[in-house]
Image 1: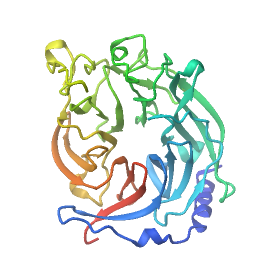
Image 2 (image 1 turned 60 degrees about the horizontal axis):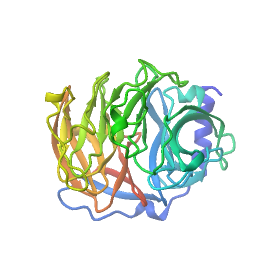
Image 3 (image 1 turned 180 degrees about the horizontal axis):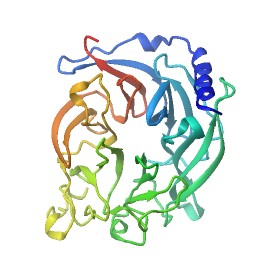
Image 4 (image 1 turned 180 degrees about the vertical axis):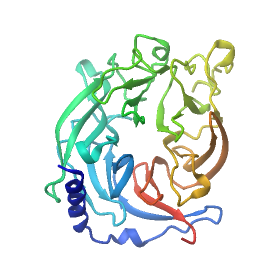
Length: 371
């Protein structure tokens, strides 16, 4: 399908959209918020969102939304109209596990390739994260489908438990993929150089590893992963009891978990926080008590011009949206807005709007007050 026909196909999808009653209702935003909040759509277990893009920019108001319980939706982000997408891989849904992140290939207009992360069931009650891709078929506007799904990575080793899969995906400028692979609540494997657990992994678009087994190690649970315009990779990471982090992810660096943290174990046992003394990378920012940081973008739009180049990310236990001022390799805490709900995902829309997914709830659109 040519780029022109691809856009035509997307337009056919949009012609079926009708106005959603929820799309016109607005929350009463507290005065300290510089944005309005408009509910767009409702989900049961939303986890991630990605706009259909061309050359890295959203084409239209059409996005994909995953739900942890295994559903993938094509969504009109203005009206809230949504269509179920068939052909999604079967995910093991338990605890924090299920269908995870969704991203589209930078050349989606040409190859229509969509990447998904998810949790696979394995024998004897074990499980592991996985990454794969399929081709999005939009020929029938009412029945979008993912065709020919292919798994290109499986987390090793497979372990018991249902937490800390991480499995966030970010495309670099060169078309390669970075993926967060959580410690699965096992802690020590994050320092094991022969394990995928607690690592950031670098792949080609076909799943071949780049630079050895991992890109960085010593991670606990990276739930946000995004590139800044200068090419630097940033990650939001859940600490234990306190010690949540914003990290600049750099090749070969060790981020310390579980040997160093600004938090403590859940039983109250302290963890040394002398990262540098042990040869570990210091977080650029950290929080205590916990906010439970999740989905992350580095804002590049013009609608919130004053935030250009800044990190915008959600907080789960903190029930907030946060902004960190990024300046090259440094970061400074800026804003924290109470959202009254757990914010799982943050995404930037085609006009520079910001979209949020509440954990177990709504898709929200943020726009500047007075616009």
